[in-house]
Length: 365
Ligand SMILES: NC(=O)c1ccc[n+]([C@@H]2O[C@H](COP(=O)([O-])OP(=O)(O)OC[C@H]3O[C@@H](n4cnc5c(N)ncnc54)[C@H](OP(=O)(O)O)[C@@H]3O)[C@@H](O)[C@H]2O)c1
Image (cartoon, rainbow, N blue to C red; front, side, top):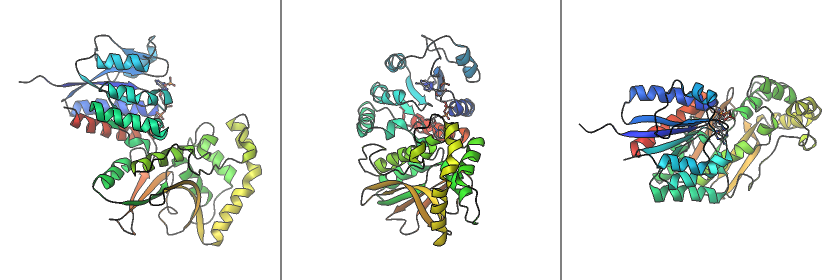
């Protein structure tokens, strides 16, 4: 009987998504004993658990172990040495939103270490980093997957890759890519016609936990721009960065530099008239306003901002905080391929990461 093959797993980041991923990993190991998955490293920004002899860390005790650890995390270069020094292949699961960790992907990949991640930073940063990542993977044979970097667990990236790799021609991608923006506009300008004041909806979204601690981090449009950058690049466009195309910020100029999120919320009601006007203009045409991202592949135009939609349009009819992504392609003609559902949440985001892990496992020989 041949020995059971082992793959080493290193988890960087153990917050909302990281904890859900650990739970899914534990269940996966029980369902699929082979290859044997050994958790040999786990870290937060300040602490880490690992041992020189690669002793597996218990899945169910991993969080408690990292919380009580007095060990500092390894820097990327030492982590690469540690993982590459083992006799088993390794996969890094980056559950952070760290640019520093993302910048180290070419190093990890060049050492034969595969990566799965919901972190957008590596794929939406400079175009050079994007090229370095995929060149390093191609040279070493290590794999890199990032399904949850757009639309959380929704199969957005895998679908786009399938369309491109099977020879379909993408003409346009359009959608609502932010759960926060979805929730805000579905409440501010519902298709039923009512809706609250803009500032009140932003406040409510914050109280319900739909926004970042400072809502300006959602309203500046950068998160959506990062997702568009990733999809545009996968569609073949050499987008330089998420700030290299038009992105409409919903932060009034006067409130861009106020000191805190709380002060921003306090002062926002003074600017309600601007958003009311936008909403009324759409209503006059029998439409609603939504915050969308679009990529016109033929004209190479990428943009993020407010658009008006007929009430019967799928984007207008979205509910709650759902995302919707429409792929217009040569094969699908005028009826786009549409993916819709929750675009945030620990469990669904971790599902995308776990399914990426399964892909890597099936490809590592
Ligand atoms: N949550 C969602 O619904 C969702 C949806 C789609 C994509 N994502 C993406 O998933 C990733 C994780 O999101 P989350 O909600 O789990 O975030 P989170 O709760 O803030 O957790 C982030 C974790 O990463 C750790 N970390 C940060 N910088 C690090 C570093 N340099 N080295 C090691 N660990 C580091 C943090 O450690 P400390 O606790 O010490 O700071 C924390 O454990 C992000 O990239 C996010 O954009 C999340």
